[in-house]
Amino acid sequence: MSAYLDHAATSPIRPEVADLLRAAMDEVGNPSSLHAQGRAARRRVEEAREDLADALGARPSEVVFTSGGTESDNIAVKGLYRHAHDADPARRRIVCSAAEHSAVLDSVGSLVAREGAEVTWVEPGHDGVVTAQSFRDAVEDPAAGGPDTVAALFAMWANNETGVVQPVSEIAQVAADHALPLATDAVQAVGKVPVHFADSGARLMAATGHKVGGPVGAGALLVDRAVQVTAISHGGGQERQLRSGTLAMPLIVAMARAIRLAVDGQEAEAARLVVLRDRLIQGILHAVPGAQVTGRWEPGDTIGRTASHAHVLIPDCEGDALLFLLDAAGVLCSTGSACHAGVPQPSHVLLAMGYDAAQARGALRLTLGWSSTDADVDAVLAALPDAVERAQRAHAATCARAAARAGHGQSTGVS
Image (tube, rainbow, N blue to C red):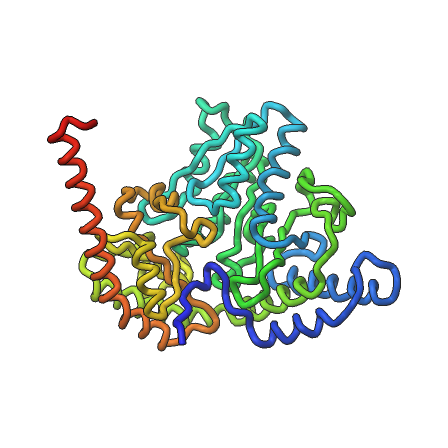
């Protein structure tokens, strides 16, 4: 049986959530239909909306259902920018953490490439933290035009690769000081650290359920009612005209239940998982000479870093090679964001934190969740030494061949 340590990519669905999903799928009715079955489906959606809002510290009217975190991020980035820029063409600048998920980075990149937006990237420190002061400096930078040129700020709540938690409330205060909206991607934070939308000061927040035992295909964007956002898709206008499309009632009710379970059990689960995380990290550091933890980490800490994330750099090897060797040994993990799996390039998060490309290529992300046990940690620590030795040997051979080819080219005058 495999040891699953890739909960940050997606978590196994909780049995009680799966039961709820199966039962809901037997209920026929479009929530927008006016007949009895349609009204029953709508009632289930609205009950889920109320429960989700309560779990996340929001009002039900602030919950916009989407297909997941990526769609939520796209609506937030493009919708905020387009509304601000249309209202005031001088507001062409986005201030954004350089360590965001690709759903945010690529949305920003699209605006830059196609709509003339400008972006000020805010770099994290070596500990992975993007400070409020660095955001303030970026917003107020006179060389970039100052706050009057800014459309919106973006800073994720917890990093999807390292698990480092960002000072969202402090960054939100910077935004509020200049009457600007802050949007935050809380996909990796919900159910793992305390999350309260209203108290955070953020004006938009992306969330999903499949990282905490819910189904894939459902998400939410919390949108403060005072914030104006331009829709990026059109149709039936089901969700406050911000997100059109038939509401997936079974997925929505299952997502809301998964998030409710995760939020209600967050404190106890963090206390359980942090023991596993720290044993995993300490075991890796002991077993692999030269291994290092990325981002801030203190044993027992569940606030500055999620209890679910163990992210390490293994020296002198390629993370992809190590991943496949561990996979063959029955350990399922990741080298970073699953959205970029298989792409042979170093993590932009690690490069932004100051690691060089060679170091970043040795990244290994092992993430825990509701189904994780001591046996999973045991499996990793048992399989890792041999996998690392083989991956490092393969890396050394590759480097030797490259050096030989380079030497041959020089000796024959080939350029």
